[in-house]
Image (cartoon, rainbow, N blue to C red; front, side, top):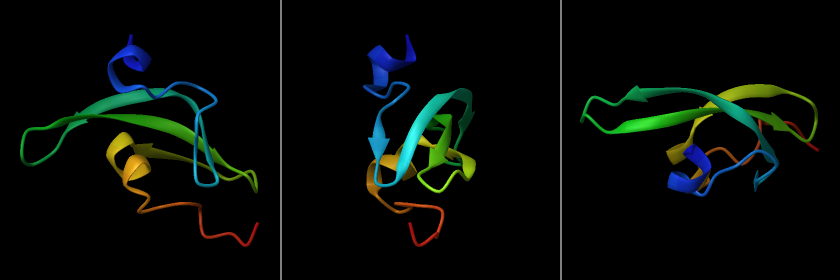
Length: 66
C-alpha cells in the first residue's frame, strides 16, 4: 500500500541508498506525515530515513567513499 501511494518500494535506489523496507510514519512540525524507510548504502551501512530526504537528494550516501 505504501509503495502505491509514494512510488517507493523495496529495491528502489536513491543515490547509493537502496530501500529495504518501510519502518514507520511520523508527523513533521508542520503536520505532514512522512513515511520512514530502512535503507542500505552500497558500503553496507543501514539507516532509517524519511522519504522526503531520499527524494530530495539531501543524503545520497552515508558519507562513505564507495
